[in-house]
Length: 398
Image (cartoon, rainbow, N blue to C red; front, side):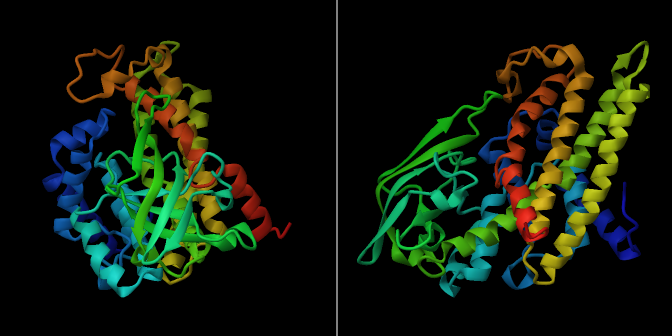
């Protein structure tokens, strides 16, 4: 599935591989490979290693402290890090807020926050969704009322991923009720340690409290924490979401998942032969690999356009749909390959240092956990149903 790389790109790929072989801690590699849960310290350790090399802000231009990679180099880096079982780069500060600050933030905000994102001083989470405003973000009700030099924030956000680790949250808030709902939204940076902020965990189907509710009760936020102009938040939100949806495509994760599926299908047996030799199962694997190759090419085109200064449009919705469908299909085939061993799922077995013995081969429990957890892929970042509506309007003009 490798692309035809130039000599320079092959040299870069070899450089990434050598770096991973030398610098990726074996403990972190083992945790990712065996599906163990990662803690905040794990992510921070890997972020620090990447930052020391100058490879943390992979999408950042050199002028802001990034490596200035082109689309192919970023593609190679993502593919090699997932193949090596490195922890993912937590995206909220690095790949989501940072591009917003670079485009809409003031010089003071850029100078203050961007270095702190890279060196790990600040850990960000995203405050978009609410109980009544998921894919329909324009329905959000969290308010920010201007009082002197501050905004007073009241409301609730939900499905806040890794919010239990965060000390900062970027939020969409309603600053006006006049006109269309989209016209009264602003983009605000909030300190999670502020009086009146409460985080409540939500336990997911795989047993992990990965997401949270975040409540705001008369939280005072300095007016200087407004990004862009007041009531410009919808424009910023759309800009951020196009980048988020492109990242959700997860080409590297899909390829790593496909390699894992191929390995498991070679170990499991059906009718006395390796499952990978079963013509029906092999055909399903071949189809998902073909879809992944096509999606990877489209992803590269979109990344190249973004690097040239073009904000992704409906293409990001296409990638979000196709990428999540492919990853979920790989997860489902992996769980099918594991067979009966996928059933006795004990969440605690995935905690580091747990004394719970998994049932079956070591790949059974992670296969089930990944299947459960990735059911969210087609929902967050704007559900796939909503993305199809965006494509229908933007491309088909219906």
